[in-house]
Image 1 (cartoon, rainbow, N blue to C red):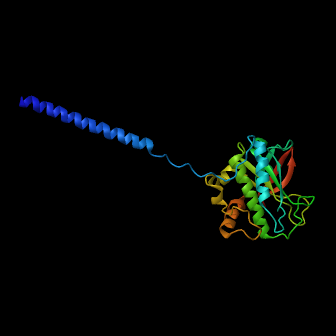
Image 2: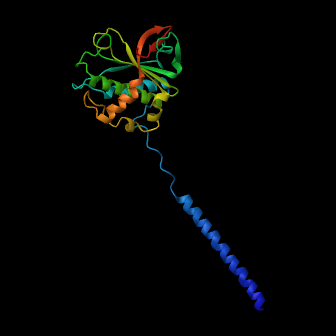
Image 3: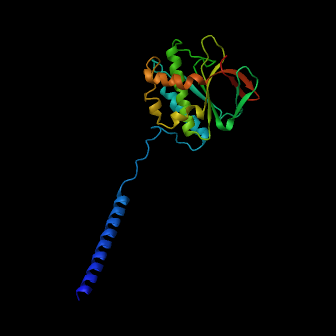
Length: 239
């Protein structure tokens, strides 16, 4: 009898341990199910274009960015004209190697083109005095246009932006040209990490850290505009 009781006791103890183990496992599973998942990453920007088509998104980006940049009078710094994704004659961009007559071609299907245009007939700025400070803010505007376009206007991978003519120039002569790889680091982080000033600054009011970022991200993207050949915009690094 004692042997039988001992055997029964051992079986009872085993079932008790097994039940406790199962209970712990179920409880752990419930905790895992109830534990909240990782928080989603912050949005890349507080504003996003609403349109579904690439061409309309490019237009929305031009309007949104252009409306933010002002002169001290409150007038727009420049108008932002759009071509490329919406232009019927534009066929793309050719970037010539320095001192050469051939280079890399980028098609209109993956390239957008903007023109920062002042109020004068040739797109020159007619208000305010030309200065390095104004040029920095114009490059900031161009950088912001490129970032928004590469982030939201897929399949665009390249952005060409014309500067207003310099004082004394009668036609457009300078551009900034951004490839996706040029800005890949900034596209991985929220916009305000790259450009912390939510309100675009007036000329001379850009904070030093942001000014350095603009210089770093645009300094190597400057190109001379050489003209148009077979509806291809031809540009080349400065001599």
